[in-house]
Length: 163
Image (cartoon, rainbow, N blue to C red):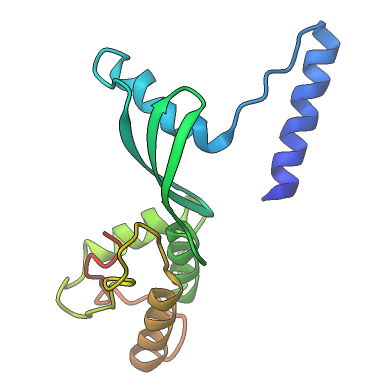
């Protein structure tokens, strides 16, 4: 991913230089938080607000007090949800071209939501951090036990453990 980001930044810098325009740096996670105000309107989404950011390799729960004024209440300790979804989809032999999450959701719609009970991480912790490494391990072990490895099975389904 970092190579993709680097290519994008270099392309943006080249375009700005070619047209004599300044480049405006944008913080990736801040942009995710502020898009709620763009989509809902500044009158509908006023500061302060709480935002759950789930983006590829990051999960954060933040308190947005104003532009540039954020408190991170919780963040990813190990694997983010997107990474767990992508890994699970690959183990099941699903096409992850559009992301593991959508591939798993499509498969889950065909399955029985009571088939598997996966652990919910960090229930005993009194903080807002996220951890999906244990869920990834539990899913991998279920796939190995019930499916013998990475093959698609329309009966495989998930309980809402990520919530």
